[in-house]
Length: 167
Image (tube, rainbow, N blue to C red; front, side):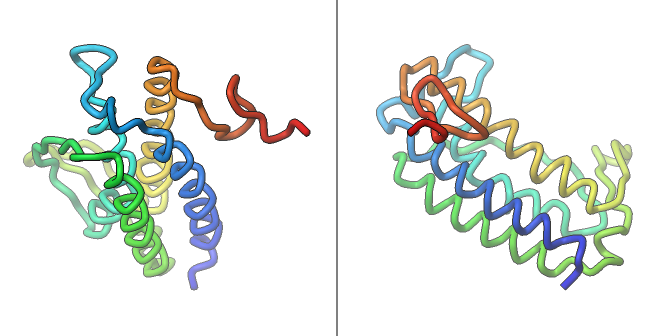
């Protein structure tokens, strides 16, 4: 296995467990709730967050990707979120395990039509798009949960609702 991928696989596993804890708190009764008219609904945001690893693995697999319009679906119920996360993490794991050093370091390109938006080593895009993008949306869910007065789980440390360091 590519040694530069091993730390990413460990991070994927750790962060998948954290994301699971967050998604388990999403209340089914509030899936269509939005904090602002310009915001995604809680359901859309949660399903997107569950699917980010697989979606980005699919986008990063070819040497170039052209942006296509898409509408974020809304889950019918909160029970869809954890299976979507499990499938997504499995797909991301498979993608990462298949990255040779050459493919990891090869330039990946993003296009909007014929216009190149960015080009960078694929391994850097794994960090920026797959992981950082995932954490960004997970943080948004935490804000939504707080606004709905739902208990916020510990992510990297204590919250007002949960302290993994307390006795």
